[in-house]
Image: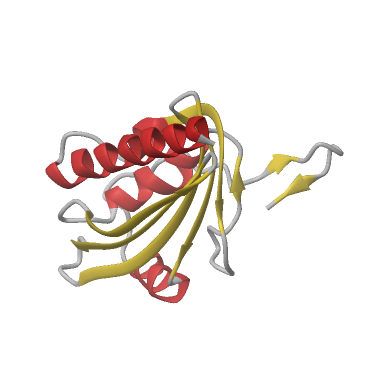
Length: 159
């Protein structure tokens, strides 16, 4: 039990430091992603999918997101919670889109962490606000988009 508590505290501190770095513009939680990490965006957004690697997720979602912004997204953490190898982050994000309209959203991310790396992430946020922003603002530069498809253990493709 003491070992679980120690792992939980270590994982929480790791995630807190990554959000502190993101807020100060010196890093981000995406730095914690393992190369083969899966990131799932829950909901009905065109970007709601499971991305099967750090590179696919960054290229399909994060880089095009940032290319639509005039200012970086700044997180304000409401809470970080841990249970076993899972760390849950509740935070608000705020930025200004390239069209000058403020972007604000509330996020909950679930990070499964092994050996100080996120191996699985699940993201919840207001996809209606996100979709409005995504379709309204065109990226300043185009990034490669994989479409968020990967194979399941049965060989099927999923989105």
